[in-house]
Image: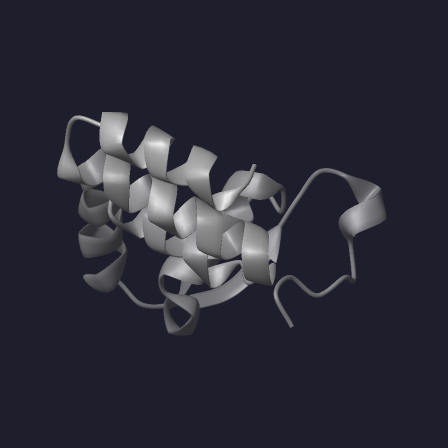
Length: 97
């Protein structure tokens, strides 16, 4: 996609949230920085509600080290004591550093 195509697409977007997602997706495509994708995820109301619930607790344990587990962990890394998964290949691995 070139800049002209990007502008045309952006101009056709109807609402601010769609424009926000488009901008963040372009930034991710240009930089490879996953924080832009996490920003999109964190802006979703259901995810904000989940984060509020997580923030009320400490010493949480996440079950599932796949894509959703990574997102939940990224929402509030200091609230978790560990991650477990029934996939033996993931045992002993570090998630997010």
